[in-house]
Length: 438
Image (cartoon, rainbow, N blue to C red; front, side):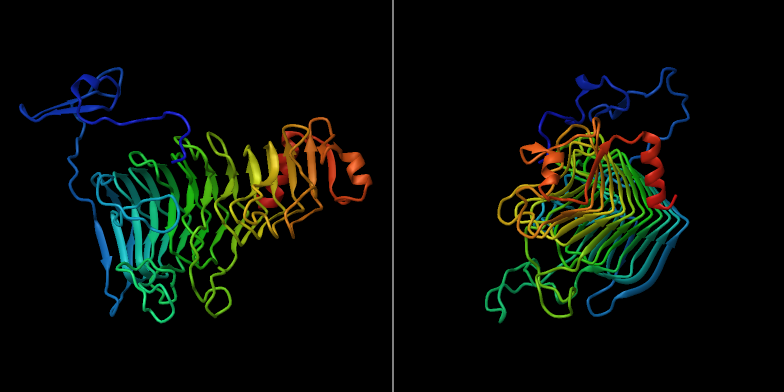
């Protein structure tokens, strides 16, 4: 899903297709390996070929009754795990993904696990996986590169009951009630360099989470992936904090996505927001990130399919198609104090099923490619707040609500928003540096 035109397909072990660098063919009858070398000079004879077999290097797993605690994995090189994309996958929650519950480093029913200052490379499956109950996992200061599937993934469980007195049940822990706490919560992912992911499996990311709560993603650098860099499969619990990250070169082999992507199609019951049972999650905060939305990226923060309760502020977004997005019932998404550089539209909603209700777009700087793309207060969804923005166009003029900006503003609409000619690139960069604290 997400690919609108034909893209790469992989065919394995066909001798007649051995015509590009790094391709190989194994003749099972003669036990001969043919390899197309990636060089103009030919092999030196000192190359190493690794026949990978293991899919898991570390298994940090306790029980529901006795969690494993206080484990540290530090200063190691971990590499060369086997392909797993044809292994059984499951449906983590209501998003688009299927996922294999496994990785080179697998953590479950564990507390205070730290993975720090390691190199994880040439892994043909997932890199690190948090499953079911985990608390306080720290993944910090690692380099993760050349990963076949997803670099870091997190997938929790809910309950079997479908109603309050549990007279209706299902055989798997995928019901709506997450109050038992069998999820990854309070994870810190900080200071990591993550690049070249999704070598084999294209529905993959730097970080993926489903049925997970309270993740902190701080000061990471990610580039070169086939789909979203950060993917949140549902709105479970909320309270996540994403700050200080650099994301670029995402969505290189797919479409209908952005460097950050989320869905929120399924309601979950937690106590996170106010301490009592509710399907309303705590707010998510996306702050002071630098996101370059090139290749096939649409939005920098693609809050898709009902995604709600987001505060997106003080970010620098470069080259996306648009800024704020709400659709299919998504609401209460607030964008403020951001810079959007060279976009087609500052924000937009698909006004169906309450999409855009009580959204906010204020105190932003939006550099538009054309003379339209800032709807202002015209025909907005109920409760949406639009005000105090700085809009820039090539000519310093703007068309809004079937008239010119000058006439629209004179009628008393959006009176504190300004429209000016484009700033220079240097002025944009200077404003971004000041905002991000560089």
